[in-house]
Amino acid sequence: MGKRVLLADDDQLLASLLNFRLKKGGYEVHHSSNGKEVKEYLKTEMPDIIVSDIMMPYFSGIELIDFVRNELKSNVPIIIISSAGNEQNVLSAFELGANDFITKPVSPTELLVRVAREINKK
Image (cartoon, rainbow, N blue to C red):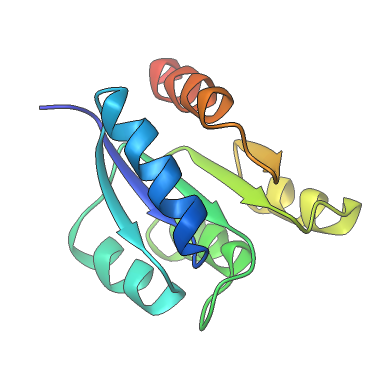
């Protein structure tokens, strides 16, 4: 069984592109398009890595990092992807415990390399 990736992004086109590339790279992918779905999934499953957009309906990527680190007490690697790559978002993500931050547009190949790097650090 491949490593499990939780992909959280409400951009359906980008999500399907990244989903395809991750699956082709040997990962098992669960996609959620909003924060509510992400929270529900994480209450019962813990993936090997989380890849999340910052801006999502109901629950942002920043809130997701806080939820995973402080409520779930998990150190699962988290990679944030966002078109909102302003300094404050980047700093907030890292301060709350994100492992990596990629500004959109995201290269699927670069994402694959960064996912592998984070998973192999474990």
